[in-house]
Image (cartoon, rainbow, N blue to C red; front, side, top):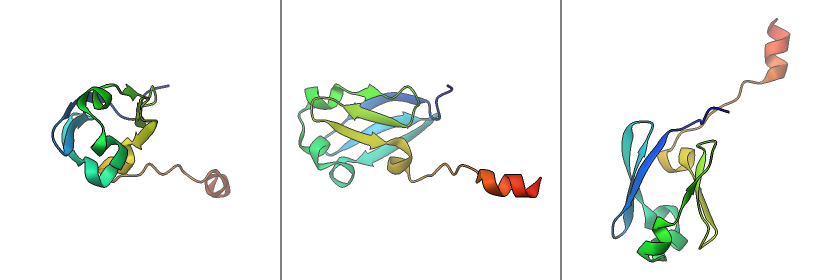
Length: 88
């Protein structure tokens, strides 16, 4: 399966993280996105796993998951198969 997003390096600062997604850099407010991540120490923040599908990031030490689409405010809409069949 081809990843939906290409996720690059993640850098952490006081209250935000910078992340490269599909070649674009984003600044994510941790206080807004995740209280767990906001309150975690740097070592915990840096221990993350990017999902093979490219849909999200998991922090095992605090059992936190964030979706890429949710963080950057987009959505991938799957076509309605029933409607496609009717149109044929």
